[in-house]
Amino acid sequence: MKIATWNINSVKARMHALTQWLETAKPDVLCLQEIKTQDEGFPRMEVEALGYHCLVHGQKSYNGVAILSKAEPLETQVGLAGDDADEQARYAEVVLPTKRLGGQGRIRVATIYLPNGNPVEGGDSEKYRYKLAWMDRLRERALSLLPDEHPLVLAGDYNVIPRPVDCHDPKAWWGDALFRTETLERFRALKHIGLSDAFEVLDGRPEQYSFWDYQRGAWQNNNGIRIDHLLCNAAAMDAIESVEIDRFVRDGVKPSDHVPVVGQFAL
DNA sequence: ATGTCAGCCGGAGGCTGA
Image (spheres, chains in turn orange, green):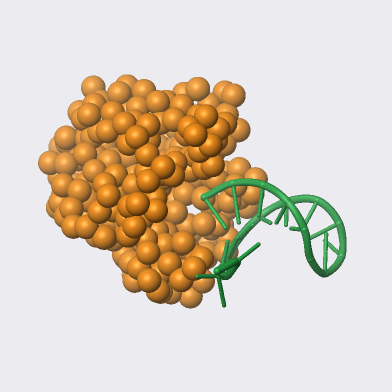
């Protein structure tokens, strides 16, 4: 079972890239972020024609997430607890059947668009405080899911650079909302409840980026960052075989500024 | 190099977010 995450940066502007990648990579599950449309604007028919079910949690103009899956979800949920006062569409999850346990196997997959958090303004900006609070809420959700021993994959754009080697120029990034103490503390706290960064465990090489800014020739200069992650519980780590980052997608026609990160699971 | 892109409103291009 192939599970991928991709910040698509507008699903409407990216239909060519999305279609092409789905047809070649053939993931079983694709977690999308920044679809930048309300539910009714999502190209459901086109995606269903490619053989996928769609769970869409959209929003006008900004953010918005979706999960495409070949299998029909057994359960779905949109939003994180505490979303009542939160207009921003950044979280959704599905439970899918797997071939294990005589067809009774289950896996839970979430799509995550963690807030960027800039500008930081000394750590006290509204946007940065929102990011940190959102990370706390994500951890609460993950904690509540851990007693469930089925595989769990939290896949998404975390807007977190985990290690200095996950960016081209650590000195330039340090202090940014993606790479500073309070952010990294929370990312660590999320992992310490029992989740692993699949790339770090299975590959771990430096300079394997998933995002390159459109500006200042970042792609041409390989001035990137690794911020798109698959966080897996122990059952998912037991099943995962490899992680790949499809950097070639960044060279396509009208590319997103992010590329897909793909996990191959023996499920 | 203030170097990009997408959506919004509104009907051009300035603003926002990343």
